[in-house]
Length: 145
Image 1 (cartoon, rainbow, N blue to C red):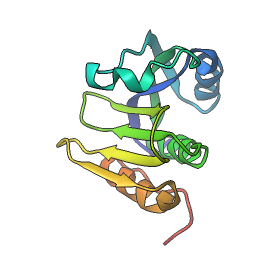
Image 2 (cartoon, rainbow, N blue to C red; image 1 turned 135 degrees about the horizontal axis):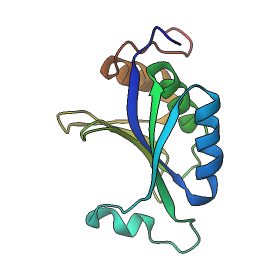
Image 3 (cartoon, helix red, strand yellow; image 1 turned 90 degrees about the vertical axis):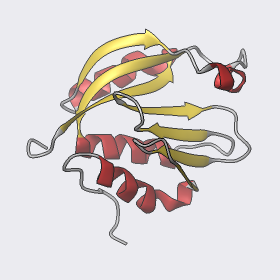
């Protein structure tokens, strides 16, 4: 992994999972820089308002590009039927989060220019190739097309 670039990202996860996820990042050669409460954009607030959900935490993380792809792949393969994974490259740091309430599972990649591309989770290889093209020296880790 040393030949890959390091990527700064924000990974949004439940408060209950944050410490375990931070430990996993450390075990995989990354570093957790910060943990802050997640506040959704006002237009998305209703999507996160269900009281049954744990509060969400933003982990500020530095990982190799290959590990970012691996974590995103695992997240997508673990989506439930009514969740949306958002991979947002439009801000200062890549942000990965799951919107808990959706009509059906989908993955939305928001490019640096703000354009949106929607995928079904079954398009995992296309998602990974799209993301790899935007990350420095990232190589897809899934099966070749």
